[in-house]
Structures are given as structure tokens and as C-alpha cells.
Amino acid sequence: MADEDEEIEYFKNYYKLANKMLNYIKPNKGGCLYTVKIKGSGSGFYWSLSDRSFLWIKKRADFYWVSNVKKDDQGRYCLFTPHTFGIGVLLLVPEEEIEWIGLN
Image: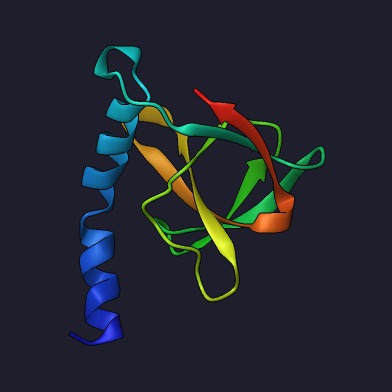
């Protein structure tokens, strides 16, 4: 399968993944995600896997590290943040900008 085909397949499944991640952070599921924040204050642009564009994100919001998505070739980790209407946002954030908080 070509890289482009893999990418298309990944984005087709984005909403399923986002809903699955939302279920993991609910206490009644028993699952935990590693809570993180983006270092610094204010906002910044971060690559959104779902939108395939940069989004303006508040750095001190709550994020969750998606451990089953490997770092990309630029060393960015995948972070998840809940969003409106039960859909989340998957972002790529450089490792040096991540403040590791702990398990939720």
C-alpha cells in the first residue's frame, strides 16, 4: 500500500479514533491516558491530523498523549484533546514542548 493510500485510510478512520479516545477518558471505562500540557503560555499553531492544517491551540489546555501513534519523522508526538460535539482533535506537538503531567 502506498504512503498516500495509508494516509487516506488513516484520515477516513479519524472520527472513529476520536470517538474511541473520548471513551477512554471517561472514568466508567476504566482506561487512563497520560495527561500532558504544552509548555509556555498563550497559543500556538500545531498540525492537526484531522484537518490536515495548522490550528491555533491554547497551550495550557488539557491534552492526552496518544501512545499508540508513533512519533513522526520530525519527532512530534500525537496529542488528543476533546472538542465540541463529542469529536476530538489529534495534534502533532514537538517533544520539547510537552509538559508530562501524569495518568488521568
